[in-house]
Image 1 (cartoon, rainbow, N blue to C red):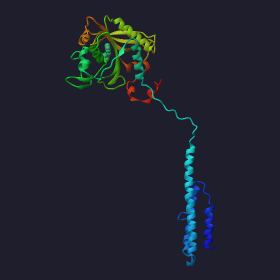
Image 2: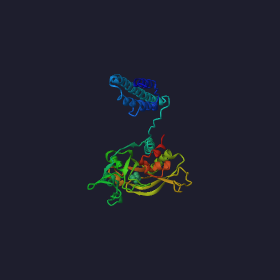
Image 3: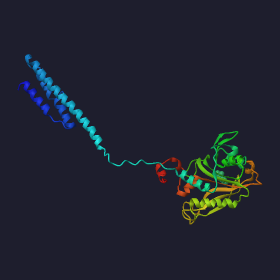
Image 4: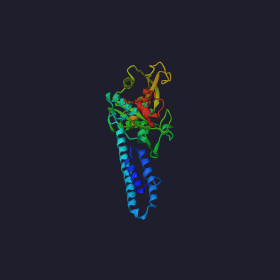
Length: 341
Ligand code: PHE
């Protein structure tokens, strides 16, 4: 067959070739574009073409090559465009969206707020103070003896020594600030972070939160303290709970007591949470020591008062039966999710 006819035949093949997908495009490329393909045999044969026909045959060959290359380019672009369309079409625009999970309040925040609400309904107002305190506001004014163990480096974080500046170890320091600047009657609640130099474990942390209350007026009695705490316990743990007070010691209160609430889980029968005693310790309390009133410029002959203090972490532990203090600060979403309201 003449080379001109062979070229015409290949041109027909190129034009008739149907490309529908990536594999037929690749087959076309191997057949008509690649150096090892069918057209290169024709280019080899071109060398034997007599000189007088070279111009004509050359033109035909070029036309065939261009047609194949043009077809390949157009089909390749068309296929790519189709693929992109296909990807978009893969989305079902009518599917409902994945819900956007909202965060929730930390249990220390919700229970802390619950405690605040109970006391503010009884007439207590919030009073605030700094976390970095002087020795006077945190210890001396509260009647801590010069050699009291709480003043040791192992128990307290000192920022500076002589004069001593420290991270407050309780929010009683706010009570000193308030009593030193306001005249009785005083009825305040101080809430906030406190720090103690403890090794972190399931039962102890170097940072926790306290709520402390203080009431100073003429003729404030221990009976009023007891009634205030009983009302608080019933509001927080339910109306069936009882409280009991055990003698205790704090430098800033006299007499002092440790306050227990009857176990709200076993109702006094005894369980693991109350260690089979039927009681859970919730706070310390007592009548404000006359020395503390004097240190703040309040006449202990004219005024008396009571104070109480509790750890929010401990109350949340009792309320939800949490066994490890560290869970509060680890930010494990599985822990936090359980308290979503
Ligand atoms: N400040 C005490 C503490 O941190 C708690 C307390 C407050 C006890 C008021 C009695 C009266 O342990």
